[in-house]
Length: 237
Image 1: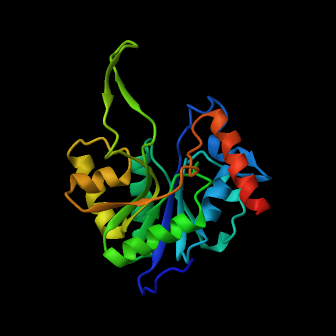
Image 2 (image 1 turned 180 degrees about the vertical axis):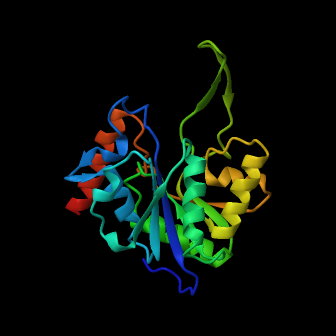
């Protein structure tokens, strides 16, 4: 699992300022513990399987716990204030990163509550971007039958899933390109749900790189149990 040779630096951004209200009204999902490490530690440490120049965490200004976390390469971890929504946290981190990085450097944006991304998936994503000089995201083909449902509980139609993929993170692009796309999307009043959506709006080519279905985002309490099973199984191999 080798990264293609490149003289361009690779950075990471982890937006971690969200409230995580779907997980719990009081407990932040990124600070739940799996095998004596927080979800955030697992998510960030996974990224350091890559030769990162550094990683910027965008955190809530009231968060006094994030900077006490010990990461595999703590000396490469930086902090900045996040925003009320993910897109503003990402933008703040990109602006912070711009003081250290070149506009042509690559940036991976990864969810704080996605602790199970595999090393192979990360290598596949980076190598694809370096080979094709495009932006790209990890994603998996939709496997289940999808139903469009009316405002009530009545099925309206079955949706063709043959060309549908479920987006994951990391999502990777050049620093300057991503700033441009996000700023343009926000100025147009577009709702940015992930980085790829902003890049798409800017008519920039974005590829999907097939990841793994166990690269889950911890959104609900039961997700934490599954994430623990995945991490435990990998640690036992």
